[in-house]
Length: 325
Image (cartoon, rainbow, N blue to C red; front, side):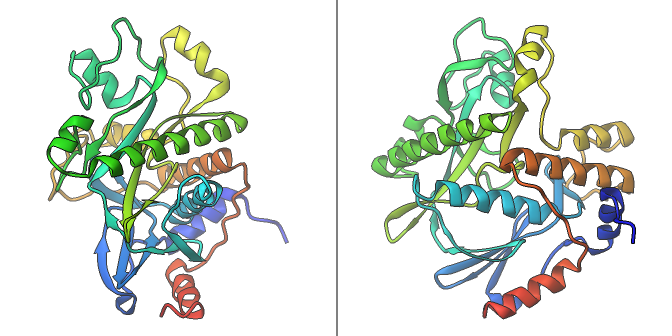
């Protein structure tokens, strides 16, 4: 029997991608952009779907995406549990995390090692990010002398809002001692992540951390060092690319944003909230799945083995075996 190549496996799995779940017995459902959350008493069951978002809209589903993101996040939570406590209780299925239900702190701690992304755009306009303007004369994608923290708040809709530490404390969004513990924890996690990624030939450029409180104890929640929450560059080529003034080699979904703008310029990037999503080709879905696999393997140093299966059915069976259903 001839073994199937990865393209064939991905194409077959297109029939089983997980768009959404509806397990009412698990608890009260809250549906985020890519995760379905079920809340019951002191537990939250998070199911990572295969949904892919771009330009603040869910566009399509990508084979194995939810499984890979959940794997990456649980991989990092396990690696860092002795550095900072986290909310993980159990991983009963590749797409599922059972976690402590925490009171979410309404501030994200964004850690930056390089001048790029929206901070670069602000810098070009002479505008501070979270009250911080980097030194004059810096170039795009340049490494900071010291790691920079730019906290933000979760907006009700649209983009997050960057606030300085002073503004956050003045508004009483979080107590001073809790906020300082968040910053300290985030710096420890980021430095660990940078050192680990370096061994795998990557630069952890920037990332975000979310925190929660359980009976007064601070825990890191949501996700950590995933392709959706972090920016990664290829280490070996960074310096040469920087000196040439061109963008670094990246590990993220930027290829998809480019494909959407090139294929449907009349719709993207300014797609309206109620506008229909146009057809997404099989080829780009396969390419994106392969990129997620490459980044999964590069980030963790582990091989990803995708098995063709009915994801929703497998999740149901695993949750039932673990007595969650």
